[in-house]
Length: 219
Image 1: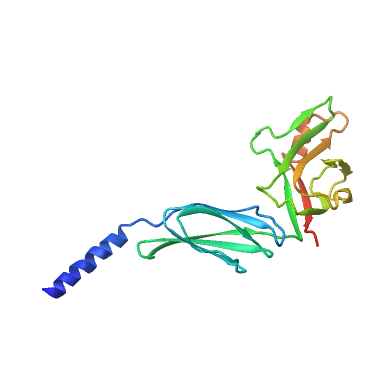
Image 2: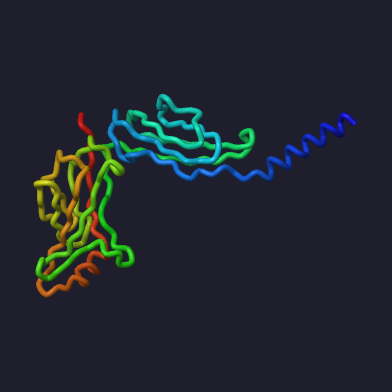
């Protein structure tokens, strides 16, 4: 009878575990995703189970956490953060990762007009196809600097940021932005050729304007 009782307990536990859904990770971010050694990065997570945070290379202050929360940590270079969430005595687990990149690094930024979302302005009077994008603290650390900017489009491009404006040929580099913070408003313009319509100009760049930023950190 005692053995049967133990068996009954085992069966109930097994049914309870198998019927319990896997834990869910609703959110896990590391902001900003591009930062310099010594910068502070904020981890933000939302789950429905017991959380354990780790990092490669190791970052102090991680480990067991509440199911939802945020924490600021300091990185020493490129870092991969890992979140593992578990439920039901650790038998149900889910895992995800978030990576922070550190310069020197070349990254592409720009504007893509997917399905005519209206990211571009253009007029024959203005004589150009124009757009802009903003890099702020959600994208990049304020300490990250520009080494070089390269035009990744098949047309000449006027690149403007702050007090600097350069006309850059197809595939060419613009050295005038060297040393500037990467954060800020970047404005891009494709001059219209004689007789060219705005629609033709947009089609010629395949609905996108992309620049490559060579990023660096203060030494």
